[in-house]
Image 1: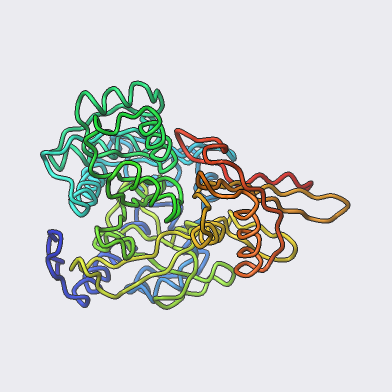
Image 2: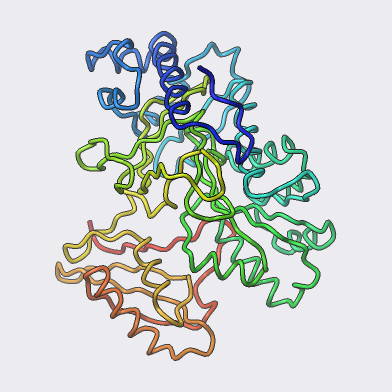
Length: 427
């Protein structure tokens, strides 16, 4: 039974979604077993027959796919189609070793553009919008992925690419950009620069779509207030398609993901056990329709929860929470595990604190120390903001941290992703 080709807000029965996923999953498992030497060997080593896997619960039998396996497969040993079917490759940054090379077939490129256009339709982008695309192009997935979605939807793409804030603002004013796409860090930088220059009355923005990094509610509120826009959190990974596999809607209750193309599982990051909806854990993704490099049970390391409740927007696409952090971003200090996202929550509840912060870890005589630098809203007493943050960190996270409050704008801004954790401890 095929799932309906959804338009936004068109009701689709849950059982229809699960039945559709089961049909697609069985086909996927047979396909990767037949066409992917990597998965055929993986299944054989685990003693699994493709006929055993037909539901999400059955996936628990299947070994995870990890980022290290994708790196070890450099450049194209995970390719699951003949080379003549591959029309494009993208790549991860490779900052921690060999990059991950991802091959795309013509159909992969088409589906990705459709998913990106679906994201934009969900947040209210129309063919009358002018969309400024500030992420990078080239091997990175973001720039070309967003542009393809804009063009598929029928809006006007303004492919400025990254950096050159002077040119970004010039194009934004002259072309009357209505939708801004980029990292949240760059969105904040542009918002502050627009206000510093006093050119808000020359800006026609109404929406912002930001991704590629976790960003807090406080940062979102700051960007929205300064630019007088609504903002949306878009999610994706280079290894899957790129950005565009999930996005939040105007109700901002969670991140809708495209369940007709992807299976999302939540697992215990330590035991690997599947968790029930509503339980927080690590997101694992299986691609149902990807051809060039399909992935089965890929560990993302992103921490979130799966929600099956229907969103007030009426969409039947399931949701996850906004990502809290990554398992590999976890900091262990003074015997306590900390995610940077927990600092976001502390800043949100602390009057006078801005969204920007840095975590600086040091070790002297085998003793760990943690210093958190935070910005304070202009006009607030820096000592009071620091003291309140310190108290809230102790109450909510359970550690005693040194806190230094700085004047607003003191911490560096980024045109890409903001670096927030500086671990200067000796290994």
